[in-house]
Image (tube, rainbow over all chains, first blue to last red; front, side):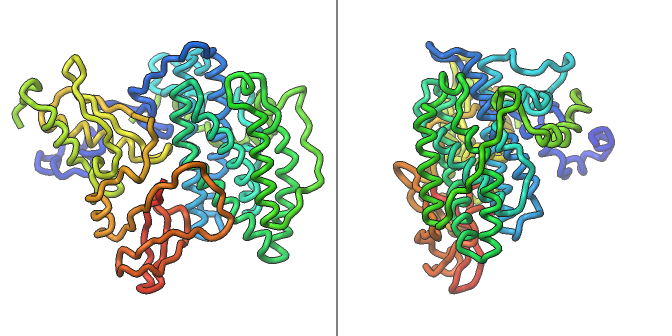
Length: 308
Length: 171
């Protein structure tokens, strides 16, 4: 593109639509952004915080957002109508933004967690974490990775995940690491819209037709077994995260409130078992995550040196 | 334009130039009027440091804003320009200036009301805001979707003139 462009007469060059697009630096050809989302932000670890634990915690919250954003983006062009299609894509975009900030923060706290790439690779740390880790290195909860179901399944899963994440972020606003506190303060505003969207659709489907209610209840039966994992914090979450007991209480309160307005009772289902003593937070995932990552990562992995 | 030495340029001039850069998705609005441009200062080495804050975490316009700021400032003779991200305090629609609100309205986009204060509440009924149609002035409007063409907007419809329009969500 550039070489043929250079041969054009000078007058044409001035009018080229590409002129404004070409920056000074070459960038990695993939990923979500061409700049450090924490450029200029002081990422010094405050006294009393263990850098490795902080990084590990940021990866957990970042992976929840990244993996669920990928599932949400699979809805694009498939939602029941255009407005809902746009809404779901907007929610996915917010979560990608949160994932970028959290993975960048994790890499700044502990550069040792970033996968090593060929020398001279232009892949930034956040993208190395997103595209060059295998499923066993992801730390998201399993609820985030399940394959998509119907629209009722989207509503139920989004209600649970956004209520839980909002409960966490509201408390992280007071976190001793000012970077996490700032990311959380921003995320709270976004997540409250996500929860509101899901809550209103939940009530609408519950009180709609027999069919919409039947589908909502079927979706709840699929999502509820995975809620237990959200209430079982790992040692890292208990150590550097917000108080897990408070988060669990708020999640239960919010779900009870929505179910009460919708006049729906929780399903009588058993929690999903732990896999070889671990959950998503320990890197124990369902088969669905590997398949999702294969699609999400394949092009990036083929071109670790790709620039444009 | 001939290169001008940094030492001869005042901070006020840098701020004036930065203040002319517009939002890539809301071109009727400068980054200053949007409240995204937070600070323009020289550091001790004489480099110009420009701080901007994202509207939403995933705002895809941040890279374009950075490039536009650098291009305009370098074009005005400021050779060393560094754009930094400022995350705290988080952006609020309350930072959109009065001039910015008028510009939005004149361009068919309904400006935000006051940002909600205090804890975030869960409303399980229809969303109700006093939103005036920017096209005909009617207060008889309804929300179509809480999520619009960009992260910061909701979709509305006017029941008087029947036109759809964007509303900047108060956050």
